[in-house]
Image (cartoon, rainbow over all chains, first blue to last red; front, side, top):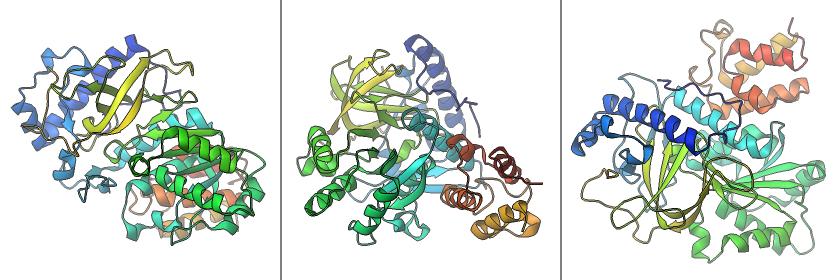
Length: 359
Length: 81
């Protein structure tokens, strides 16, 4: 079910607060009503919180689901018999994984939104791409994981795609040397999950007799800092080390989740994560779920206009963050910008009911 | 082999399509059973190599059915007559 017709050829960072408040509220309400009608569970949950669309004047007042709920229930808004695929989250909280129901149209929307967002940083011209992962990750037998989705989604920006790791997850030094020899003199693109990127450059730095020159490379990495936080590696350490080891200065983190693939939050050259016109963000206070002010820490809530086949458009995450500003980032992109501070201390949020309202 | 035939060969190879399926009714991205995003990128990579061309990102997302592929190849200077 295609709910919106976006112009994906435009920059996805155009809406300022005045426009966004109206347009985003309108669209998110439409999605809420759509899923209320088409997903039985979701409809029941909205009934339980006595959702009335008449009382909504801003998107911050719309009901949201804790992301953990998608790990316990498989929610679908598709008609019976419709074709779909199941994507799974990486399952950072133990063995629980979300099962996300995706129809063809939602998958296309995800890819187009990702192309528009990533294109704003990487440009329209595709450049050689080095993937910090092993080729087996995108093979089907291994399931459709967050890593498969990330690599495939970002592959649109690259050509001559080369996998830097061997099946045993060790760097393929010869292949990397060959890649840098062929393409390293002009701009190229490096993509990988944060912890894999870190491990990769640590390994390269152990090869004292070689220097791997990545100075023309732009790195995009995502998937979270949790595993690096365990090793006490901060964002500053990460950037410093990559520069030291391989001369990399262009590094963009992104924040996103399998539950809202496509509408990722990219980090700009000033180190701020940005909402696009496809997404929204709120910070809520842990004690009463009220909206936190700019600069106040709290739980991150993410909204996306892309989920048409499952009610994952408005989710309370298990991450802590802080909004830094809106519309006035020096990078010129409009919209809210923020910072992720890490996972919440208690592993998963469990409320007295599984749906929270804003009021 | 004409360029059109080369294009068709690539679709057949990556998607396991038959001659009869090479039309806009059957060959639709994300609807034809095997034509998903992973195989899509392999098809693009092989077309780029075969014809020594370079898709722009928007070409990749607008390549959504059989005829769209032909149009894009023509736009990129490959004669498909």
